[in-house]
Amino acid sequence: MTTPLITLFAAQQAQTRRERLSATLRQAIADGALQSGQRLPSSRLMATDLGLSRVTVEAAYSQLESEGYLQRKIGQGTFVAITMKPAEKRPPTAVLNAPLSLRGQQIVATGGCQDPLFPHAFAAGSADLSAFPHAIWRRISTSQQRQRGEALMRYGDAQGYPPLRAAVARYLAQSRGVRCDAEQVMILTSSQQALQMLSLLLLDAGDQVWLEDPCYAGARNAFIAAGARLTPLSLDQQGAQLRTGAPKLVYLTPSHQYPTGVTMSLARRLQWLNLAATQQSWLIEDDYDSEFYYGDQPMPAMQGLDRAGRVIYLGTFSKVLFPSLRLAYMVAPPELIEPLCRLRSVIDGHSAQLPQAITADFIDQGHFAAHLRLMRQLYHSRRDLLLAQLAEKLADRLLPMASPGGLQLTVKLAPDLAPDKEAQLSAAAAARGLLLPRLSPLYSHPATAQSGWILGFSALTRAEIMQAVDKLAQLDY
Image (cartoon, rainbow, N blue to C red; front, side, top):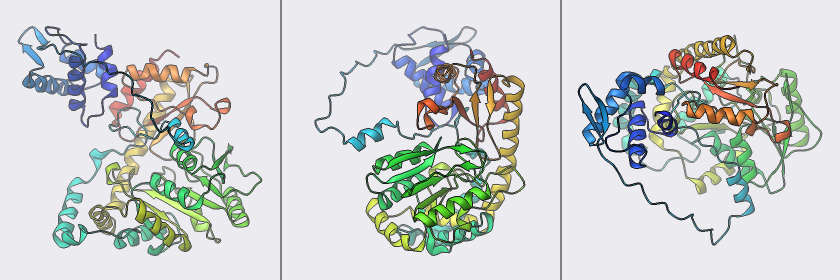
């Protein structure tokens, strides 16, 4: 009875669990899957099947009763109160009169990079927003609006709000060993925007770009959009391996390789810097989650070792604060700043000033450092719990990869499983309400791809992690 509802629930993107369940039931009634007079499962059974609390289910049932969708009868149960005529199926969309460009077709074929709107298990890379200091953020926002409200409503600097650029430069110097001043920092909406801008500014069609294999899909998409020729870099225990040639640009995630978790050794970093200096190649260092390192001390950024001015450093606030903030930063060599600002002026002008001003105060008043300390401890404990649960219940089926930090844990499927098991198990997991981001699509060639999943744990409570691993263990491997 509830299997179709489980599938619909997993696909819903409303914000809260109650809203997701309410939307699921409305859709099932609208589609005709639930008919007038049909009895729904008890709140206890529905809560068990969907991994929700009974209070959440009761709240959703009451909401839909008030809207007229359901009728609740004391001692009998909850029943569908109406029948809705299913929407008529429309004919397939006509073929575009003007077909996409070859580059456009390549971009569409990648599938895009859509992050899940709700962090259910095991959505990767989501921060735990319940632990965010909302009261402090509201207080700073009120103060900024009172003191600078009118000025912050005007057009802003394409390079970014100067106090935030200065705060970012100080933070990176202290925490990551980045060598820069505020004039080298640019504030953007996301790391993805930085990659798109660098692709537009630095690459011509046919230029060589080297990137790790497997690799962050957003980077690959940005370089494909620029018409670049992509060359995959094999990985070993020291990180991305060098090869012969003269690339125009190299993309690396040396502190915590995405998605394998490998940390690039100092010797390998120096080799890459030497190649960039010798070949006059640009080297993009994407430091996407180095704030969350669970060892004694993370290795400093490559940028701090660069003496030739070939490294462009990227970071983001989406994972350390919250995703809808839409703020990231890029540290570029001085000669690139003016061209980047000109480019930004014709793309979207600038980032919103009020969030930048709030973030600057949040950093300068010490709240950012305090928040990071708390979240490191919280995420560290959740990472350890996930590893322990996998070792206890799935040691013969899933093989965790390196996990010195980050918000997700990459696991490989046991080598004795068939290659198509990854897709089959992912689909079966979706029916149980589990999202399993697949590992194999991040490889450049299917023949060399490894099967597995990228399991996000940072936004999940201890109970949610344990329940999700139980569901994972119940799959038919």
